[in-house]
Image (tube, rainbow, N blue to C red; front, side, top):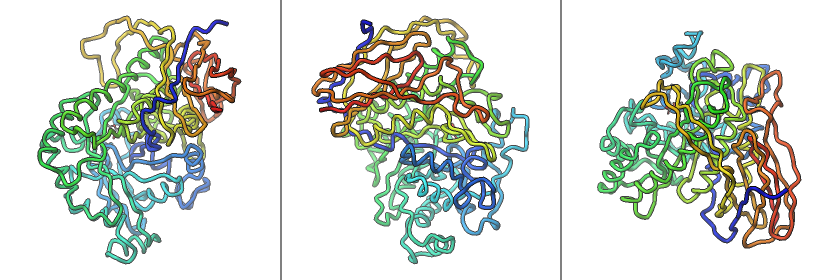
Length: 524
Ligand code: AHR
């Protein structure tokens, strides 16, 4: 068949190294993420390693999870880390931030999330990371605790064995050696649940929290709380203020959150699917806008972006388990948004140094769903499994040319309520193919999303600057965009190998409708 689409990969046009941390995760004390998700308890009959769900750890190793963010989210700015150390049976019970969330309150079981037992604290989190071969990324409480408490948390984690009283408490828990936690979030959503600060106030707090934090030879990387979605004003005002004041530690990262909001996780039509794809592509514009705004003051771009919350997020009533707040089902539609979001990060590898999908398990855009002894992967897991090949590789320029997908977007209420400007219909189009490419030695990895719900794309892939020795493909596709895994049918959606045809410096491949594909090309 004649190709109706073309991809050009320019192997000699590097963008930047893809930081493995772009493939990071996020875990919050919210709904079923920690309790029932990660933590099952040491005495549980569910296979566990020191209380941590074994199957989850194995899957995280399989996808090379590089970094995990904890304990929130909004929970972080109401959390006292001292509640979560020492003997577990002596730890205090506290009210969890999410008790008062209006969406959580709509759930049938109003006992959900009332108390935080603090069974899972710093030691348990760091062990979870170590078991999974991931780096810990810890968010400090900037709203409700003073900087001294933050210093002491760093001391608890990183002071050398037998050096301080906190090191001794850590040793008494069984961990004499320092944890060497490198990534620290200085608050979370400080414009909202994290303190409702102005950018200037937050700049003061950021400097107060980070100046002279004990280093312990770890060279900490501080992530400042950036805006919600596309709020460029927050970015501009923060950078203008802070860089004039010569901070001891300019931020390593600028946190950006961008959720793709809608109402229904399963009950949607084709237009809704395209509408979600369209909304999801806003991540690219946000990254570009933010980078430009940061560059006005941070001219050498010392600070890069940490997109530490992203993913499709649906309304109340979409939970797989009624006790898991925001524990929505994950379909092929979500896998497509997640995949092209990762492609956006790859394409902007010089701007984005970390990203954390929200959230790892039982919450929003999860890779896993678990309840008691039941555990499944979602199609998002397959995406992370395929895309792991990009980690640490050099992103290179790739151009995609395919017939665009036109659709009528019915702009509807999402989880926040009616749309700004009211309900309306608008003609829109999506790029016919989206993706990214990277090179690691002789290995070229090309990931491609076909968002069309109806049309396959016969594609010629031209490799400029190299010739092709072999080409293979792995495809995640389904015949229905609603396809998802359940406890009863855990492999309803899964990846398949497919043959790609290589000749000279080109590869021919037909990308199925509504699919995510990895093409692995060995260069000769
Ligand atoms: O991921 C759920 C919540 O979304 C987080 O706690 C918060 O940071 C964001 O608003």
